[in-house]
Length: 368
Image (cartoon, rainbow, N blue to C red; front, side, top):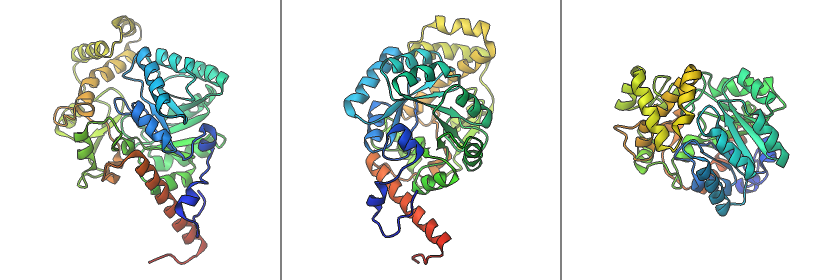
């Protein structure tokens, strides 16, 4: 990020260039990650139209719904966008197939090997963004053909790793200097963007921040709770008892209860089957895995069992009975702006932060 010097913020904002903006063809190095029941076509298109890149969450969608969502996004924007494919989950392969058929510009793969996706996406000059949490996963993603990495730090909502972004980003960028990096986890404003670029990232993902915007599908009650100025970065929980994968959620009486110990096995399987049925996932796709890949499918079953609690909060706004994924960056969120207002503010703040840093290291006098 170049120092602003005497130029206006908007003039400098127009010349932001990183390897991610070049790779994805976007104006600003800001990404909306795919968040189930939040990153829908309206929010994806809004972020892309504002100059970032929106990524559609396909976890709750079947193949037909994914195709319709892609068409809906394209009816609202001609800017670059992507779709998410969490390969561990049932239906992800079919959704990825649809995205490839539709030649979606960017496919964000996670929790699985995406070599077959990269091979086919590259045939139409699309790009693959792989979400990883450590060096071993990063190497595997690069070997599988990923064009860029999204590094999910410990601060992130949902399934972040056990290393903070402050360490993860410079470590991975140093280890794989040729690969563009999107930093995720703990970023919600322009100071975070400027810091991430200094640490070695080429862009930031701001899931929690974009969830609290007017265009977001997140229940309004949850937006109000998270943007309350009294909420802090300490109002989250992190652990693996909720959905089988280490995850960060909003602290509440219900999440405290669910994080205490894993649900009993019979209840997990029962609720997983219910979730599969509600999401139109045929049981014949679930049962064989429970028999032949027990450990893997047990994690999926736990994740499916958690769906009911997630939807109660995210979709219904029921904070007392539901569980909301949120990052520690909630401590930085105090309003509910439009997406475009937010993006312009972030860029302005990043410019100011960059100018202040430049002045500090150049010995220039700073305003009191």
